[in-house]
Length: 244
Image 1 (cartoon, one colour):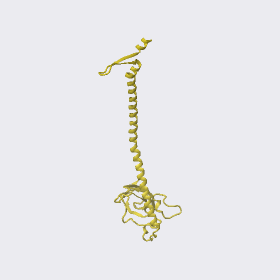
Image 2 (cartoon, helix red, strand yellow):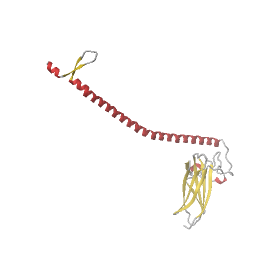
Image 3 (cartoon, one colour):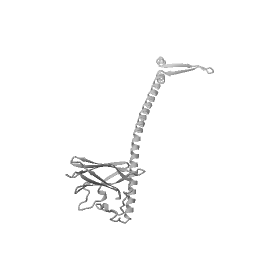
Image 4 (cartoon, helix red, strand yellow):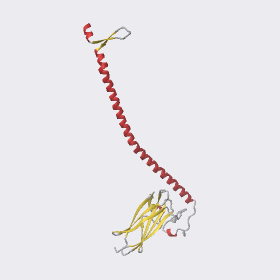
């Protein structure tokens, strides 16, 4: 038994300069654990920690990549909502001022007899915040198209919104764009029955009308109201058409 135990152990003698030699015995299994097993366990732990670190680093990188997109979307939505809130506040203030103002005389709005007058309505077309550009009349098969751009003319580029109408007179017939703007049993138009638009730069418009057979002279009247009912632009366009 003693020999078996001695073969299973390693003996060490430790010499020092000032102390007497010391004798140590260590189990071979324990020695292998210290020299082989422990470094392997340490290596595996370090490798696992590195793998976890790399994994979480990748998650962090992916999160950072997605974060700007989410933040940008939220920022754009916030900016859009803030702009709409400011616009609604301005509209509410304008409406309050209109309700407190007297109705304009019929003479001042004689050119708008087709439209209902509202409380505090003003004619701002002499210094408009919008201009009409690239106005053209184009025959299209049996129809006539009036194309133009509503261009924001404000210095600060503030967003402009409103309603537009186009009236076409050809011979003894009159057509209106947009169609179905008249309310039932009504002979006058409400300003907010026009085509709604909102723009910070420009907004293209294409108004299509049926062509009256046998007529060559057409007359268009473009009328634009603000979102609160003020007249902000009006322009007449005449055109001589070729033979259909």
